[in-house]
Length: 445
Image (cartoon, one colour):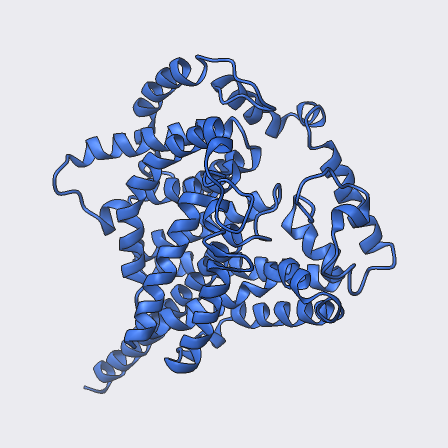
């Protein structure tokens, strides 16, 4: 048990590192062994030495995850025989699913979910303060920073989409009041703290929203999920801080005219936000080549020769499909279509079923918690639903789950969802059994 707890603490620290430093943190270590490979190897060691609670196997999410991994592995076998290094690199989108099963089993055994959420609440203010500062530093000075050892990546390679996903999770956490539940303020007025947190989140949103539509949309959809389940939530407190924030943003982010493909400005933020809903604006942007690439993948997958097994792994899809732009990206900017192109329609179908099962399980669990009067538990599950949706949104626009900075936090979240919903199932089953037993006793007296 101490070994299991120690691994959980280290893994939590690694996920925090990915949230704060994005792609840069992925290069902690030295080529070809980085922090992701180290954590996966350590996790397998903990699995065999410390053991896990196998109750996670009762979850349909776990079973479908294993089916998904099995199919992807079968389609990747030819690639591993040809070039195991490249095959492993391309396969992380499903290899990292091991973290979901590992985290679920460890959390069910150690019962550390509350501890994780408390840590999240304590780290959240620092993350919100860091996003606008770190993103601005990366935008203006990233190319002047030293590179990570064993790579060509700057120490400040921070992506708007990655930040957007974690801002979405932070915004949902704030709106549901979970930061007060898990980390009550002691030295500052709760209202003042809420204002400062919302203003910091807004500053981060303008910073990343000026550069990345996927990150911006992730936050919008996550907050929409919270509002759908909890119309009377803390978002109503955003109005006044929002007015103050946008006044400051106009002065700060619109003060300069910077070079580059996209300005870090409020005007660029507005352009990106409106382009989400404006088809004509999108067509005038740099995503045209993505749409053409996605259309080609759909065509050769559903109507061409790659229906069953896809094009496989250890293959640069950008080169193979004729959409290479000179950068290091080997995959289309859409993780769902990466799975389709590499593992065929069956792999894609299993992936969609898996995501549908995660969503359905969460919604069903939220409704069950509300019905049982467990509002706090329901709010935690709403937060998980909003956060999960943010991951899926960003991976629809970027190469995200294909790397450790997106893949490991995503699958760890899935593992938490499995553990939380299994805990709830056990709790409600126990409560129901106790209720039935108590009722029988009353009838027998």
